[in-house]
Each structure stands twice: as C-alpha cells, then as structure tokens.
Image (cartoon, rainbow, N blue to C red; front, side, top):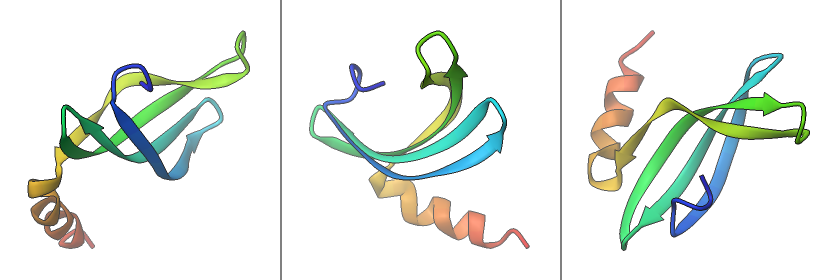
Amino acid sequence: MADFWDREELVGKLVKNSREEIHIKKVEKNGKKYVDIRVFWYDSNADDFKPSQKGVTVAYENFSEFKELIDTIE
C-alpha cells in the first residue's frame, strides 16, 4: 500500500498463520493521520508480503476510543 499512502511507518507485525501476517502501521494521506491494521499475504512469486483488502483504518482522532474498546476485551 506504499503507493496509496503519502507516508507510512510500520509499528509492528503479528503472525496470523504460515501465509499471512497482520501489519500495524501509522499512515498519512492528504495531511490526515490514521492507524492501519491490515492482513498481508505471502506472494511466493515475489518472495514478499502484499497487502490484502482485509483490514481496518482508524483516524487518529478516533484511535483513543478504539483502544479503549479493545482494552475492554478480556
């Protein structure tokens, strides 16, 4: 998705399974900041992970509320 975002910074990765990872990134588009949490799939032809359509992008102004909701999960 590097071609889509104006700026992106990888925060971390989680292994989902042998063919997929979850990437968490701080991203920016047209001056607006977001957190993007997305499933990436392994492309064996390119020997690299590629972004899928599976994910969520949360605007920075809503991210505190998003974190509070996640923290309620036990």
